[in-house]
Length: 59
Image (cartoon, rainbow, N blue to C red):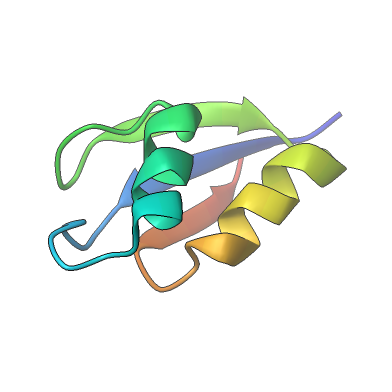
């Protein structure tokens, strides 16, 4: 199974509350923080919700 490297590239200031909660659930805290998550439907759904705030790379 592939892994996704997720980087928070924009601040969550001004984002909707559910988008902030999604960023927190992904394990991202500050701008430029990076996490690795498995590539599955749940992760892809969360990334779709905050696609304008993150950068995603396949590892």
